[in-house]
Image 1 (cartoon, rainbow, N blue to C red):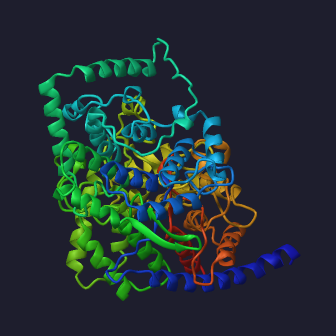
Image 2 (image 1 turned 90 degrees about the vertical axis):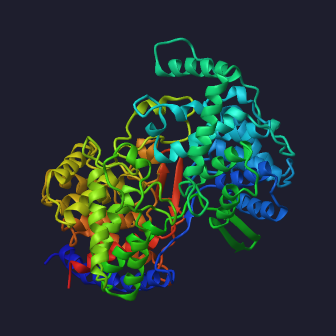
Image 3 (image 1 turned 120 degrees about the horizontal axis):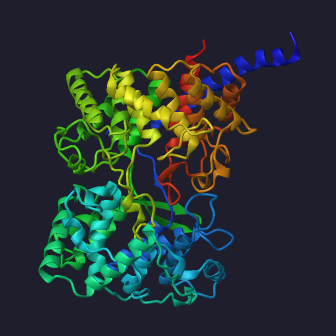
Length: 637
């Protein structure tokens, strides 16, 4: 036997031993994090614009306190980088709008403009185009306080809510997160308020004139012309029509408030809905506003740091998502299906099933409600397809005493998933056939994705759930066909909701195997080759979020525990457990594990809007390594 073969032979038991030790520690760590009510929820960390806009909202409403400001400012300061900027993800490039908003908040908090950190931020902002180059949402916040002209913002009339669903640019054409944000913003931008900020940030202006859009045959010029018409209409609207539109917009907003006071369980529609209703005359002690403001406290994270206490605001919370992924990880780690932890989690999930119709029914009016689950504690209007698929996979692996309740919930979930398939065979996250790209071309839409077309990761999760539950029919086959048709030229799959091609590929490969593709299928062989070609020298996998904008970053980045887990799940699904790539990946996880069974992962590996908004799911760094280690152990003795 050659030295190389001898080394390989010795590596197998070493990797198995490392995996066993790491698996036990990670399993116990995850079990220890379960809430007594049955759910798991890790922090959902984003960028400092959440904290800035929370302070600005409170300033606008006249309720900002010195204590809140001091703690938020301390957190914002702690996130500034050496070059004076703030980024949208760990290790990413400085972001102009985020840096402008952070500077504004710190000045509001009393930071001296001649202080080194403010000088550095201001210099960088001016070198990148100043306030004039910021995104629309930043300029809307500035306009609320007279720091930007409403006339220099795209016009969004409230009459939008009156458009029928067949008409282009109607409310249903927007992705659910976008429509819930746009409707209240039409009210805010129509009323054009101006409140006192107490400071000015005029020093961030460069004086650069806005670029003129020259006449040409293009969507950009067409929508620029439409915007000019809408600005003229704003000055002389049809009074009765405008009043009716404002009333309908208010009704639309109020009808979509959730039980916890939020709108959609996410920050953007929440803050803009509060602003819109307040401007329409709702007092702060009105039940809708009182509940909305109180609900924000539930999304605050308080932490003691060496510099003092900080507060930061989560953009969203993920208890259902974290719970169903955690349940599957524990089952893969050998935790029995009737373990008390699994039973408590199942009880939580059964109580979270959504039995009412939401906005998804606009496109699927004949589909009965029930069988959908949302990402958050409270978001009955928007159950999502991704969570529902993972709920079914989790419920399928429990041994709950109320089998009838579990079976009924799963039947309804399957019915709803099948009914939400888009016409092209794929699945989006919240709606079916939400694919009208015209919305993306509006001048207003520079803040991220605004529609919800099918994606590889969501489609893969649905395909996997249907295949596991035995639904081998036309619905499944169309989903498989969609995945095969949307494989990238390099063999990977794009990741819409996770970073990025590692996530997409890690989701699709196991799904296709479950759906019946042989491990030797050409599409799977190409995916395996891509994964093995992009393994890092340390044995892990990583992909920087810049890959959404720059193809040079695709499959490249610092190794992370979560992304290594995704890659291993794909390789294990096609039987590559005895390969050097898998052994090195397993040993990377074992080597980098903390003493408490978790992993350090400052990198953001979740995606809100590709290219614009990213997430660090704090439980990803435990759940996905644990899942991969469990499946690796299951392949050997």
